[in-house]
Length: 287
Length: 236
Image 1 (tube, rainbow over the protein chains, first blue to last red):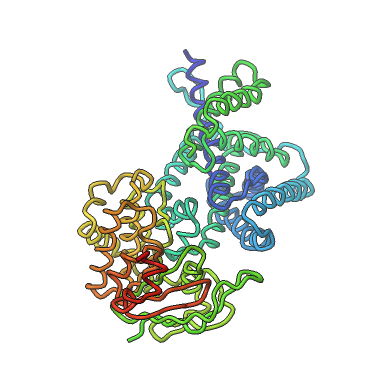
Image 2: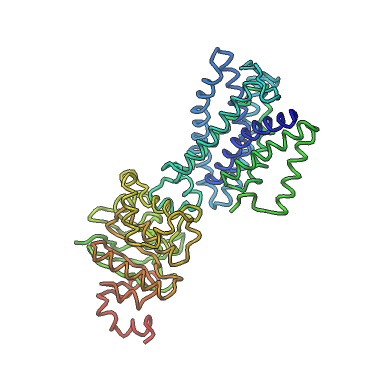
């Protein structure tokens, strides 16, 4: 019973992180048409920065707040400079999509290697609310509970932002028909750059949260990119609720296998994808 | 007073010239029909007016002010609403949200709910189904929604591209009735159509575009009796 409880709580935490990461990737792909394989590097950079900030005596929660504008600006500036330049020079939309993915591979190498030059490749970490509480028999560290609460709150806020705010609605409109959205007065280039920036922020929040309960290192990014890709395919390309649900499913699978045999969790992820693609090729919530 | 004035417009895609010396005028509170077969250049002309395509030469002015160089996303704020062919609704958004998007520009956004209520008076069917997604609507209902979305910004001039295309005859009548009502309420309409007969019935004046050139223009009452129009477009 206690084991089951442990698995559920761990699943929720992993699922919350996965959902955050995948919503970001889904937004970048669904609206800005960039399959960002350097997504995990934004997670890594935020995680490493949080470690640096904490080393400077800044509280981890304040570091979380500081990382948000930083990751947004990096994403936004990347989009209005090199991605816009690439878009102008690609000719067709299809060519832009594949070129953008190649560019992201380049960003992955650049970011991960610069980070390795600066911080080396050893795992680093800090102490944050390591006390444990007893939840119905399961012993859970307080930091993990805080991480779970923040991840869920950010996911819900992000969903409300997309469904209720003017900017959020215009993002959805631009993802469904950019030409019509432009005719209605929406600045599509700006909206796409904002989407890329928000995607980077979601990755950054996830990175800071991860650093709060586990050690991080400069090579951590790619693993999370792979998971985000799996979740986005699982949930349905471009579907934000799909990413939330897909993230939770993958989190629970990871948690169950983490208990049985951790080395098999990647195998399990890919088996799920394989079966899903056979049964429902467009993903759980795919259009 | 002239609302929209296009003068000696030329437009090319690469080496292919699509519009040749096109001139056209739309006066306040009239319906002007721009008629012509597929590929005559009708949509290209609209795209030039709305800033989506850059003409090679000529001028376009709206209320005496040049429109050339105005980016596509600023046209609506000037008071021109463009309804592209097929309506182009946002399929995964609700009907209400689609309408809200029609009032996207900053100054209009805060009045969106009052505007939506007005649209519901005009198109009662949309009110019943406001929470459904646009993808669940039939072709005619989508066109109604497209018109309502186009009117959300309170435009002075509406550009309608192929409003009747793909609609059942009864829906065509319905849609054209609304166009007439708009004109009677002081909204100027440029109606781009392949449906020559019915467009002539509601429009005040018409231009016929053939292979990128204006071949005929005049009052619809006169054009309808023109032998060439009768033979080539009305099949009489």
